[in-house]
Image (cartoon, rainbow, N blue to C red; front, side, top):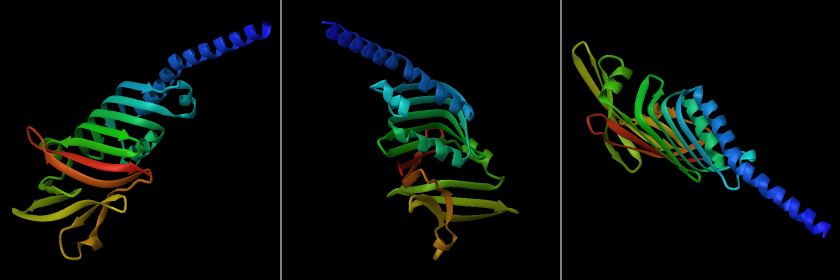
Length: 220
């Protein structure tokens, strides 16, 4: 009888600990993520879910949802944060304003399912002008098969010069290649990160002017 009572008590304690963990551990994980992101912007909300919650002790989670008012980071820092999502099965992150270098993007979103990543952000005409030197302009003119054709123009001393380039995923990185014979020799890396293998990009016109960029990749 005593063994039965002891076993029942032990089971009750384990159940209680599991319930407490399910209630407490997600909040601890949310605070850690909030503190980490607060260095780069203004966090509005963080939600973490995991069952059983004890997997959070090993950094695992079922789903993470992050909402930010603003986010500013270098490209390398952004890649590092994306890499940290590897231990979450589903991630939904958004920022009303995303600043990368001198360019401000609006309504940026990142969606992760397993290892697949989908992102998008809108660039307004005003934000594009503010990011470029006076007299310069760059914008997409065609999008197909995971590639973007960009047209760049520069006005100097009253003369405007235009040229096209292709933005595409090559070997897991994003490269811009001048659309001229042997342009590959002048290809320029615009995004390369050990955590992410890029697969394609796209663009579409945004309401009110500007355009929305989309990108797809996978965690390495």
